[in-house]
View 1: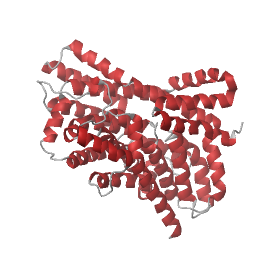
View 2: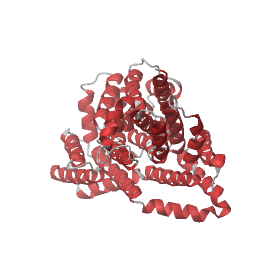
View 3: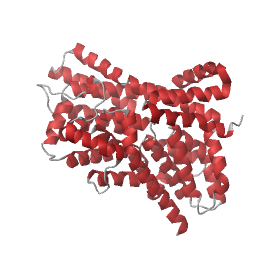
Length: 446
């Protein structure tokens, strides 16, 4: 059934409720319920239950729940074992200012490009021990972290993003078999949004681009009152300990990253073995008794329950939008205006809007590719330019959406409210998107 413009209503409801209530989880749930009411009337509960069960049974959902839950346990061990405190003390002695601490956060984010989940959770949890000492608001920390998560995964596609999109390029016969990632690398010069998002961060840190709106107020609050905007489980609160030493931080982190990378990228294997190494080290050093270690793992897992609830609601909402045909509707409305010159910029603007509105950073791009690539071929448009526009739109949606997984996890890692993080970083994400759109338009004119 073609729902037409009605397919826009659930997403509109989510955005309005999020802005009005400042509560993202409830807003996404309400949007999903409205979508199922549109499709099934007052018997919506049956389909809602069916889709929720299907989402929970999906292999990808199970992977996300396991990875994020175990990251909570890993981070809790670093915090309670004193590793985060020791790392913060060591780094603080080498950094003399707020700008230095934020620059170090940005640089660390550039190196952890294997997956945006890994980046969002580990960089934020690691660096808040440093930035807190310089009265950096948690919203500013979350912005810096989020701005390197998805953008780096796109620009260096030896990542989960690269594997996914590379496979889609091959499936759509745009790239030869086994050449998908190579094509992504070739399109990097045309990925204007992730490139700009990365460049804007240091410009904001050094106030070349001024603080505006909610971010300015958050930083003023932190500097003048010492209220950093902390919103996190006490399990993840960095604390000192008599046994604090940098080895208690570096050995677990090296184990986590090493087992994640080798012999091939696998976040679940990495975090499982990272926890195992951490437990063994802490037991050998007598940092905590076995009972307390396992209690800490459970507490860390519990701390991720709000995040996992948000991700589950998001996945159900994405399925509801797919059933309504939202992405197909938007593409159909824009398609008549796509000329050879305007195709890249219209693809970027349209898919950025859909990705932002739905919180689906991979799914909507997968839906758009079978339409965008034949259009590009028919209009004789540079295919690398179209790939760059599509993946840039995915990066913007991941970065800017109030309820995307990257936004939720960056807020969790930095220890602030999801809504506060989304609102404070939005002006800078929109700046990057505007400059990216102008760049695609400039290429059309030249």
